[in-house]
Amino acid sequence: MSPAMRRKPAYDAVTDLEPVILVVDAPLVLPARKDLPGDTLPEFITCVRANQAKMQYGSG
Image 1 (cartoon, rainbow, N blue to C red):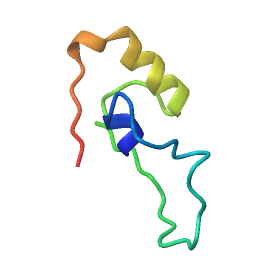
Image 2: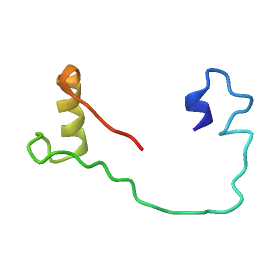
Image 3: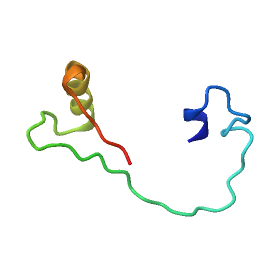
Image 4: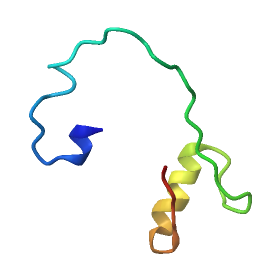
């Protein structure tokens, strides 16, 4: 997350780090209200882009 949160991180997470062990393998879920159009991710993205000013989101 550091590269996404810092303008100039002290390292390049892709080239400077080496994986040692897999700690967790968990699926990512994108829950949305039932009344939003789009049954697939591309359809949902199209809806969000068309209605950006009205959309809200939450993040842990």
